[in-house]
Structures are given as C-alpha cells and as structure tokens.
Length: 270
Image (tube, rainbow, N blue to C red):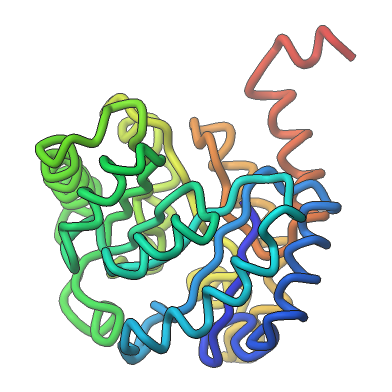
C-alpha cells in the first residue's frame, strides 16, 4: 500500500503533494513502481498534529480522487476519521476506508462501509494524535491493542459490516513507546489469531529515527529507508498481509523477497 498524503503537515512528506496534479502524478508513479493499493489522506494524524475541518479535508481529497478516476488501475483507500468524508470519498472513487481511530472518532464510518460494502481498515490508536505520544503508555501494549481492536470490530459488526470486509492495524507509532512498537511487530502472530487480515505501517516512523540516531539526533525521515525495510520484512514474516509504505519501489523488492521466506510455494515457482 503506497502512501499519498495531500497535507501540509504530515511528518514525512507534508506539503509535497498539496497540488492535485502533482498528487495524481505521484499516485501514478507509485502504481508503476508496483503498489497494489493506494492510501490517500487529507488530514495529518502524526503526533502533535492539529485536527482540521471536514470541509478542508475534502478540499484536499476530492480533486485528487476525481483526477485519478478512470486512470488508476489499483484500488484507492481513503484515510479519514469522519463518516461524511468517507461517504463523499467513496462516491468519488475510493474503494476502501482506512480509519486510524478505529471508529472511536466517528462510529458512523461503519455505517458507510456497510452501506457501500467496501473494506474497512480499523487501526488501534491510544489517545488522540495531538497528545498520544505525551500521555501514558499502556502497561501491556499487546493486551491494550487486542482489547481496542476487539471493541472496534464489535462496533463495525453491529453496524452491519461483514467480517470479510474488516482489516486490522495495530497502529505502530500511535500511542505506543518506541520499545512497544518493536514488541507489537514481534507479536503480530498473536494479533493474527483475532481472525482478520493485518495491515502494518512502520514506514519512516519515529521509533526508527530513534533507533538509527547519530550524535544524539534522530535520523530524519528520508534516512530511515533501510530501517523501514527491516520492519517491513519482520512484518511480512510475522503474518502481515498489507504493508503501508512511502518508498514503494524499494519496498516492493523487500516484500517480494520476504514473501519467498513466508510462502514456500513462491520459492517452488521460481
């Protein structure tokens, strides 16, 4: 899953793709590089980010979705926490809804997914983007994630979302300590026992910057590609079905090699 942030303040690529034409070009480039899915977001949810109005989010998203309609062959996911935005995005061509709040911000997103019968990604977030890395972390990260995702699934199912529509995301970097992010990647097989496909997004995130720090300074996002590659490999080997990344061409290579370890059938076909 390739990431396309049409925001001015995303942690890694904020401001690069605010222009709808440039955003569409980047979307096409990610498809050419081998992305299987595209995730478009109009509101940054990085640590410390501010919430934007739905109207502003739509002003960023809709021109890009409309520009890609009929041109992009891969499915588009809309990254939003609002039902009204999800509804209009699906009408404009999005085929997947990605809710990083796990239906906590606006449970009506589940109604939209049920009505349109589109896949719904439910991510675990502890707290809110503005304060999630400042508030206290869970004593047991895995237990906290499992409980939160089960609650999200329950809300979705009661709204009529079919089990086959649901994808779960442990929310790496969203209200977790740096150490807890590694712990969750290690314990992905236990999350897999919940019975849903898993999406994992580690790309360029802060815990990688801290791990790769030099002279007491975190590595900048653009210097975290090899760290990302290591976590993408770990995610796939531990059961992730989808990996969400910024550097599509490089991570396609990583995923193909990791798949050969995870799936013996692929090795036999070489």
